[in-house]
Image (cartoon, rainbow, N blue to C red; front, side, top):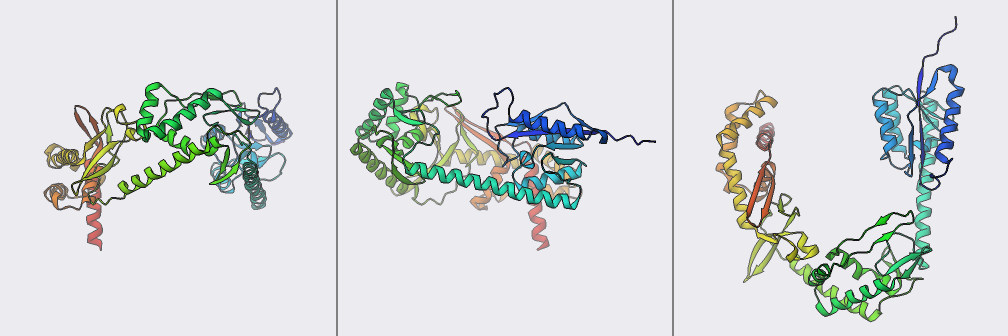
Amino acid sequence: MTAIAQKMRCAIYTRKSTEEGLDMDYNSLDAQRDACHAYIASQKSEGWVALRDAYDDGGFSGGTLNRPSVQRLLEDVREGLIDVIVVYKIDRLSRSLADFSKLVELFDQHKVTFVSVTQSFNTTTSMGRLTLNILLSFAQFERELGGERVRDKIAASRAKGIWMGGFPPLGYDVVERKLVPNPAEVKLVRRIFESFIAIGSVTVLVQQLRAEGVMTKSWTTIKEKDRQGKLVDKGWLYKLFKNPVVIGIAAYKGKHYPGEHEAILDKAIWDQVQEMLARNDVAQRARINRPSNAPALLKGLIFASDGNAMTPGHTKKGGRYYRYYVNTATMKIGRDACEVTRVAAGDIDAKVVDQVRKVLLAPEVIAQAVREVQKLAPETDEQQTVQTLQSIESVWEELFPAEQARITHVLVDRVVVSPTGIRIDMKTDGMKDLVASVLAETDLKKAA
């Protein structure tokens, strides 16, 4: 009697690095898929059957597994829906040796065979694995070599002053892959530089520009995708002031070359702005480098009611330092645009610490923490847990600032500052996590 071949479910995976040509009636993905279907048909006597689901990644690099269809393919492998994976070439699935070793391990775990139509091997044998590793090594080498060629080409082109694509700067349009001055934007660029010279403050200038509704550049990509501008901020202004493209320079990795495009700003104005920015940088570094030993208790926890994070800062008056938390948006768009600009660190730290200490003493909170810890570690003594919490509160003032900050971050989820007050959100499992960490440290000390 003739043995009946077991049905083997075959998934076909195809990939193309770029989107070029994918809109054609018959593209590279179609050609790969047809070759794979033909190979599966040749194995019909072995029970091979192609699955209907298509696993196609168009416009994705093989240097990463962060591709929608390959992730869906791997998920189906884990679900036990696939017996054989068929590709045109192994580099269609991955060009990374490290990634491919993980894939082969996953395939082995779920008893999935991997087949390349143009490179005959079987991953279930040691010789097949050796062949695969050799082919992958060359595929990875080819990818890295291709990247080096691209970088060398970009560097050589920039040295000749050629525009190499990307986001066009304000003042220029891209016509036939070259930068061409945009008359209306040229006037705006010149006005911005001259206004900064007259005002001397980026913060004041950005407030004026935003009040006028001045937007960053809007443009359309080669693929006809619209990129809409947005209201300018300080970060954008600094980039504009630092970009030498406006004086006809092509910059690449810190080096400047004469550009093939036309300059739209006088060199004397550019130099004056650079001198002013340099003076401002020196003054800013001097402020930042002033010593302050006081810790930022709420760093990473405190936010303004407008959703922006608040960052620690300090100032000096009369020989004394004063700490505060400042809205990060004030650095981008100015103080007037924020509901809350900054708050005194001492006052708000004290309110949060007061809340933390109340939590440490609250009987109902302690009882809940004890129950949770008992679930995780039944051998833990209940009385020891209670004493641990009470001891933290009683010696709070004697704790190092770093330890106070650590405990605060374990218990507090978020502090929100609004014009009318503050809101302190505590973590649901904060007490349980605190007790667990403290008990763990105690056990380590005993063991030592």
